[in-house]
Length: 551
Image 1 (tube, rainbow, N blue to C red):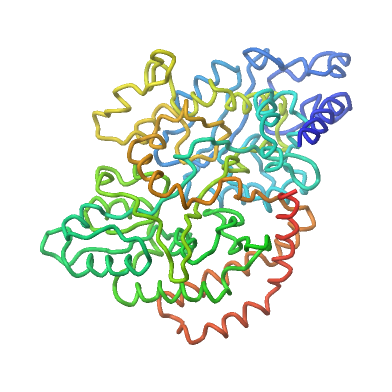
Image 2 (image 1 turned 180 degrees about the horizontal axis):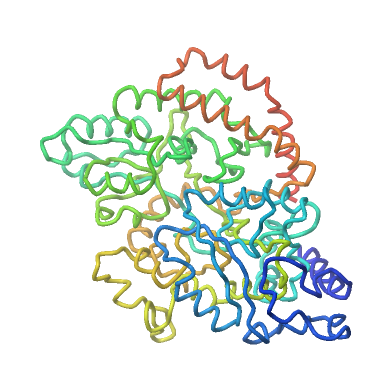
């Protein structure tokens, strides 16, 4: 892989000497009043005259870019954000941000690419591998490997860890998006949480098996664990709006799925995992998965599952948690999203399933996310933009991203970063992550950054998160098993014709089976219908992508 990185860097140097290969900014939406370069001799040089390869500011005269960002609910408007204002002061680059709420961002982003009405830069882009290759094939994304000489921080990290280049390089040899890198356990393990206060009120032990979980949920339903004299308890609650698979996703390991890695992620569930022989497997037609659906249907029919699960988002579930109505919920790496009620919840032991399987599979690898930031073909200043993005991979840049402004949201004491009182003990009752949102932009992730234990001062290193990780550590799938596959242009085109239909078919029918809208006696008919779709091609393409990633 070091050879691959050397090839990429060599290509970047060669490209900078060729006309039209990034040495001169291309046409697009950026500020037309900013300098476009110097003499013809300057344009032929390694570095365009408008940009500085080292030091700050990045540009000799201010430039303006147009950006689009998926705005996390905890983070203030990027146009007014102090961290972004600090970046502008440091770099000389002003960015006019179109801030799109997380819930509507994917549609807005797709419309922009579909109409070819592109910003210069997209942050928290959440671009899947398939879309990344499609946009690149359309000529809408800059090949970032051609600008690696303007990314010394990321280049150094790639030299240290070959998994980074492997995770972000497309089959055509180019890099079109940047990753979020993470070496902190507290940010990579997703948990399921049980209400310890309710357990204590009913003198119950934490469940250790799926059968014991069922018994606890029944007790939560029948025995007034919140002690308010009302039958208002919700034993099993799900944040399922737009992501119906969350009904079962975190418990897949209790049925033996995902133990060798799950293709894609929680936000882009492909219904594929890796079996013990290294073969890509379609989860939705497996007999053991049918057993899991039967269990979920049982919970639904017996009034143990929140009937609003498929329609509610995290904010709505958090409100129920704070009304002391929720017994068990699978969500996130920590409990800060719950607010004041978070202290009532603990991670129970990883649950053993009906066939003896026990694993926690909802994890993220050290190349935690890909497709987090892209430079589009509309950008006139790719060199400067690459340097702007690369700053976030330095310790100082990651600190700005995650901790905000020194002296306001954090301070340095004896060489260590510490949150100030307005963050750690917020007078308005905000959680750490909520309070940091006024000073730092990291909320929700999907940003170019290199997260280490030194700079992770939020919920990831909170005592409750560490305690939860201690409980599950022996059953967590190794981070190195999380695939970060990439598709070729041909593969992306093929997947674009049928992958979503296959995924939607399984999503819709599994919801029907769980809720009783479709009787489980029709399972074989469902599998037969599924097998009439191009599922073997779907598996074959993903197998090829997985095999490339393994190598």
